[in-house]
Image (tube, rainbow, N blue to C red):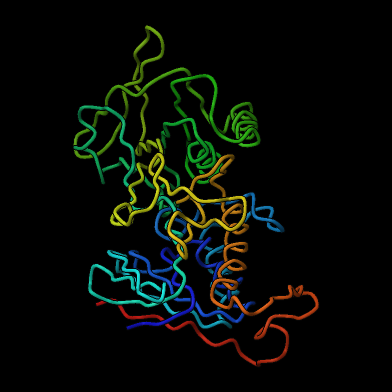
Length: 350
């Protein structure tokens, strides 16, 4: 039985930052994640993707953000159960919880914080009849290593942030980048739309709108695409086709825990502490929903901070916590009180 103060389900950026905020309150954390390493989507799906809205970092790669978070929480020695999925939750007579993974590992804590991001997910695939024939042969739904596109002809389809951001990034990597979207308007950030337009004007990105990919051709791998724009159908040569239509999220076993669910997300009370309908169980980050919710890493950090403050009061109702700024109190391990930050304790994958 693994015992801790706050059991965090999900080791993405929001879950990792919660460890830091809990550590400032002298609360121990243990994290469960189905992936074999911390970082969530930032590590598994797009470690090389640049992120632009993290305070004090005009640009930071997703993988580097995770590495920095791991360094930031190291002094608090969090535990990790990796490669295992949180399967069941059982409330005890004293109000605490036992969470058991799909491999039978049991965790006991008075507080459970669900920070599972989008949950389990799979890419949304375009309705192209022969697309499955070219998967791993030039069709990729997720960009893990941009270097495989070095000096290659790339076509990206989509109109959201991922399609825009990767088009901008690969413009300096691939020999050519073509962005295809079924509308003239994009759903992504205005700044990203402006960057794509600037690169189009500079001849570094080819923009085809409004248009759709109708088919893929090639012998053993992708050699080109059939594109329809209005009444015109033409071929566009390429080495790689990357449809970026988002991810279809699934809560998985957490959806059966008796939590109030709305549109595949967990409803929380955002007027105070992001607690769910089950006292002692919180949901932070992309996994939750409330009026005005924004699915941003930045917002997840804010939610994690308030969650930890509330958790402290639930664990120690008789204590009054007085907030101290880190600029005044420092952080043990980084303020000269310890010569070396201890490494995080990680439970090995079976």
